[in-house]
Image 1 (cartoon, rainbow, N blue to C red):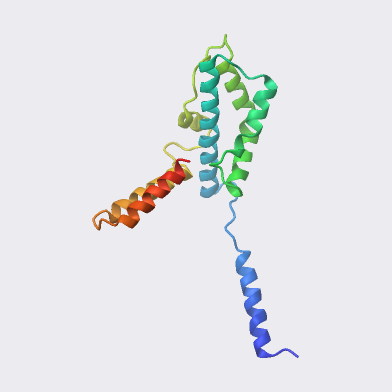
Image 2: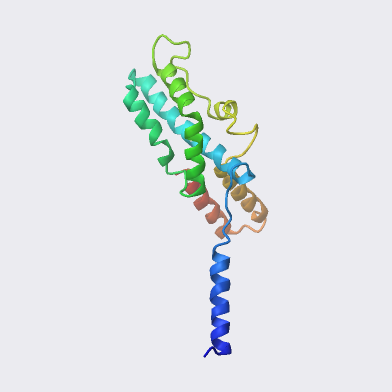
Length: 174
């Protein structure tokens, strides 16, 4: 027989399970999705740009298989978090894979007009319409929040907040 105490526990259990299922979902077209999409673009293009710089400086090139492999693992960068951000990165790569492959190939292959030119990360992402003009990435939002936090409490000379800011900055620059 059900007692009032048992009903209370069942109610509490059902309430907790329902509340755990109400996670924030990032759907395409939302501001959060746009933020993740822009962040994925900046991180991926930035890491590809570093690889491109190495190739140009050393006079080497990627074979097509190597270029395909490098593009396929682009979303595995440590600054791209799992979950919704990784999904946004996957969508970014699906939409712009051919463009990235073509542009990178033209930049490390002699004979093309773009040969030995590096990508300007922010401008390139804006040209791909992955980022809006002057849109901040997730990492830039974190850095701005950390600076605001330190600026607000700087008058109090709090060593704890200065330490927190230093730790947050180290995490962002990993």
